[in-house]
Each structure stands twice: as C-alpha cells, then as structure tokens.
Length: 188
Image (cartoon, rainbow, N blue to C red; front, side, top):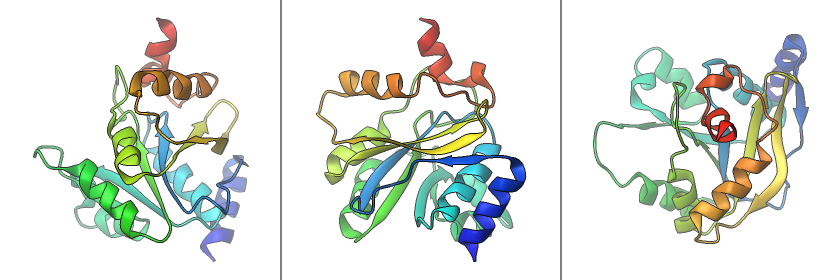
C-alpha cells in the first residue's frame, strides 16, 4: 500500500524516479545529498516507499518529539543527540553489521542550513561496517530523485573518494543551491 502511495504522491507532484538500488546490495550507507530543505524528507520517503525499500536514517533528536517523532520513527528515523559526544559512527556501523539487510541514509551535509563542507560520518560508518557507499539525490530543477548507479567501497583515502563522489553530484540542483556545500565546492 505504501509503495502505491509513494508512486502516487510523486506523480501528483510531477516528480520522476531515477535508478534503483540493486537487489544484490543488501547493506549500504547511502548519502542523501544535497540537503537544503524540509521537502527533501518528503520526496525521499516517497521515493523509498515507491521502490519498496526499507530505510533507516539519522536525524537530529529534536525532530523526534511528539507528535512528529511518531512519523519519524515509523519511516525509519534514528535520533541523534548532536549536543553530546558519542560514538555514533561505531553505533551506526554495528547496526549495519548486525542487520541482514539495511539501507542507512545519512545527510552528508549534516544540515539544511549553509554547509561549507560535508560531514565525514557517512564515510567512516561505511568503512567501519565494511559496506559500500551508495549515492542518493534529489534534483529540484529536473524534479527527479533516486539513486546513481555508482556505489563503491571506501578506499581509506577520504579526500580522494570525496572528490569522486562530489563530481558525480555536480549537475544536481538542490531546492536552495546557495545553502549547499556542493554549490560552495563548485564555486572554488
């Protein structure tokens, strides 16, 4: 039922789905980029539901207060208390290691506000869990969202891997381009 609802809501908004996660990919850390609007959550959930993909995602704990918290948990949210130092990378990596199948979505920019650069947590989670990184996107100019075909294992060279990843995202237009670190990166 949620699969049909996701497809219908995307169609109603004039959005198209792009790509898919290969059935052989059982566990992955998926980058959600760019992330500049609350609408990103809506379209992302619609796309994942339309493709029948079970999703878990990290989000700031303030979004999990009643009544919004009910929806956040229902759709796979995992609250993160950003005010405390914790071992989120190890916890998320263990979640992946102990699951039979899991797509863990992480907003690489870590915020909808102005982001100068990406947070490296997604990379270190994948590296520690021994799972590939997949690339999810929303392109507001094309009204298209989904998954790039590229997925890869972290090499251990974060800087080099990040340049490759950001190059794949170079033509993606976020809702608010000037808030995106990709906009900042391309302007350099």
